[in-house]
Length: 241
Image (cartoon, rainbow, N blue to C red):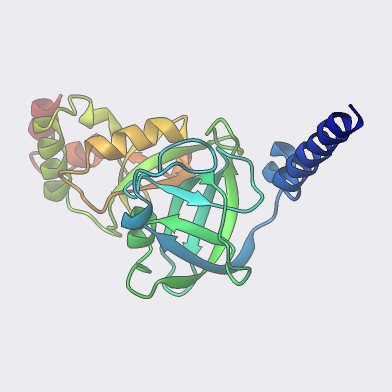
């Protein structure tokens, strides 16, 4: 009888200890929202892990914009900037890692590809928490966009071609979704990361290197306005509507 009791007590202590070990160091959602940008080294993982379960219970998708972090709550949205080339991408935390203490983040294959760090394997990055665990922007006036092309200056002809191609593959609302920012042509705005991710999947055949970005909505200009302002643009705008 004493032996059975000791077994049960040992199991209870082991269970409590395991729970403490698994949750130790995991930040709260509140602290994640107020965290300052952090710099360090990021790595990535892809095909070998594809389809396997992550720590959050989701299957790992190497083509989704996700990341593994040791402490941030699952669902937290991060802006990751490759400080070597200035490229950035927005990802959602859905796994734990990296195992190496020399690195601060593991990125999916797709995210690493957009940051141009796939070949090098690692890159110096800066992490900034930009969305809560529900995938909503932390700052008022910001929204998610799907970056189609990095263009600092775009002609009305190029923009009209983009809208036409999008409409042909099912984006009947392309005329209202397509915007330009200071450095990109993008679809949006989207209130949640999930909505942007779903659109990213839809547009992948046209833009295989599209990515998710975040910007102030005041900096996003409807493309339909640029097309209409060009010579013969009113007729082009009418056709697109």
